[in-house]
Amino acid sequence: MISKTVPFLDVHATYDSLRDEITKKVAAVLESGHYILGPECQAFEREFANFTGAEHCIGVANGLDAITLMLQAHNIGPGDEVIVPSNTFIATWLAVSMCGATPVPCEPKIGTNNIDADKIASLISPKTRAVIAVHLYGQPADIDSIKLSIGDKKILLFEDAAQAHGAKYKTKNVGSLADGAAFSFYPGKNLGAFGDGGCVTVNDVDVAKRIRSLRNYGSEKKYYHDVLGSNSRLDEIQAAVLRLKLKTLPPWNARRQQLAAIYQTKLRNIGDLCLPETPVWADPVWHLYVVRTAQRDKMLDYLKDQGIQCLVHYPVAPHRSGAYSGLYKNISLPIADTLSSQVLSLPIGPHLSTEQVDYVCDRISAFFR
Ligand SMILES: Cc1ncc(COP(=O)(O)O)c(C=O)c1O
Image (cartoon, rainbow, N blue to C red; front, side, top):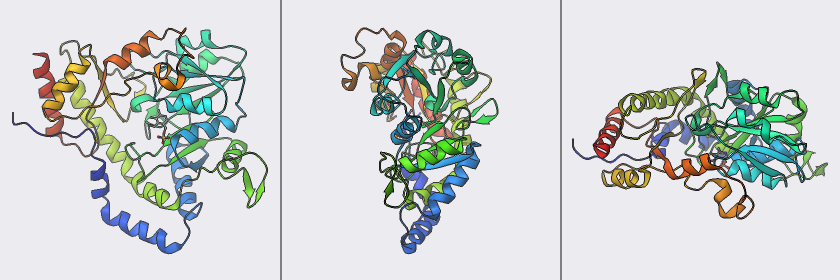
């Protein structure tokens, strides 16, 4: 087979395929003279709420702020504990820390990589205010089992859906499954802006009102500030781009699903390679296609030599990162540690060709031969 180049994700291709529409739309926003909290943001909020099935959507500046504001809207702060997955992007933990609360790590299930609902009950203390379930790599977490573990305790359940726009849990879209959900529109996400962006989706009208105020200097009426807020708004240009790209999200997610199916078939039973496990109730959108092998670093280098760009999500678990240095030294999180040394994300994205994915499979088979 001739050697090729396979990028991890071709974000420029997403622009190329919508170039004319995007150019027109951005020009129209610039001409309008309305750049912050205008009609594009309002329309996107309505359309994205509709897409997720939630009652309300509040556009914010990025995914980290989305989680932070969601927690702040419930007055989660110093002295409170929030249960988070031990295996996630550090933003999930940082949002809790930004509020002054303490992240309490819960190990994932090794096949699905998502939080293990059976391990939550033993982590609940009188200080526990919330659990954040991350739909990691685009695969929905087991929300019903998490709700069962929480039982009738007064503990909130939030979704970190930053990697899972359009994923379904038992026929319902993520973003409407619990007490609130946070999304990121970072450019590489399944629904990505051309800059930073994020949003919170919620069903409760009062919580939505609080988040609207918190994202805009704690203000509902210009220059009247009722609470300590921040500046975290989704600007009109990003909102306009997101409205266009929301229309392409279903076919682009479907393409990711086709490519993941090729990996699932062609990479079965090869060496010690472990493929992602998908429960029957899960309809993932494959933000990342993450395999596991004890030979991760060797395989990464080998694939690089073959022109194939892979990444590691994530090489350092949050409890091992400098940001939390020392704080979790007495806590054992063997699954998070194993994952950080073994996971490898293969190229995936709506603009990769079948031929490129076949080439990746071929080279991986050659590596294990
Ligand atoms: C699981 C998860 N949560 C939160 C975030 C934070 O999003 P942002 O980068 O938009 O702040 C990310 C971004 O990569 C993420 O992957």
